[in-house]
View (cartoon, helix red, strand yellow):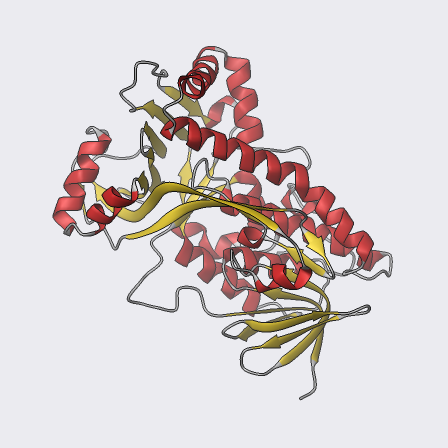
Length: 414
């Protein structure tokens, strides 16, 4: 069987994979994306949502995706953090308002299924992007001049660059020979969506509890998404509750701030863990999304990091193509590794520290967390700086995340 040839092949068809493929196609790469459909098992629907920060929304705007999914998203104007640990060293309630740093919301919250639907619709309309339905790659062979990908169905593909967006157990990462550092937490996250009688006012409520955060994020109408971090035993108990019983549990934890809770939808729970890599690219393979980093669902960092991966890789590949160079060459991979190292490592450290400061019984950790929130609550310039860096970063962003994005020569964006 002859091999189809591309500039870039993206392995993995989740949100990070589709975003990477679209970004690569937008900068002029003849691209293929190969992977199974998102959420193929209707008996286990994807209940997760993603709070897309403004840089990620701008990437979707610049690549022509946002108009296809914005009707399913709710703006996020306010983030409210409440210390619900019951400990002696308690932090004050802290409220972050997007209007303190500009006229745009922090971002938008959208169901993953709606996000992927918009991404896929855009990908289908791009003439230089092929979507290949596949169970996944079974073999990836890097070479001096190209890289060969064998799919589970027997199809062979070749490219100059592979973007591995194939998740935590990434075959792309294995083929690149990149080692990892992994860790786990004695926690599970329960995810679901629900309705409520009181308006959410485009506010995210984050209750910091001993077992972990209990976070609601607005969805369109009087609906919100929930990520509830608990001990494994408690998470499994909650999974076994009926719809009315779980709604009552949510209502109790929210302390009345959203009124009466109803329509608690399908629920899923997953163990919390972390993973980092020694480098982000090698042997014609660049890692994006959870193939490169795994962090707990705290602070809306996970998929937003993956979107920055996608935009950075596209920028590095575009620079090579403009110079007539190999988009999978060593210089490109080194530039991508350098572009992602500081951003990812700092976010992984911050999220890990925050999570451990909640669940740890060590007083110094609790005191450090409490002091940090006291300072953010009381010092407005510090709070604004924190919001700009943590929630609306502008420095060091790839060009596809700028407003407006400059279109590469001969390539139409939008």
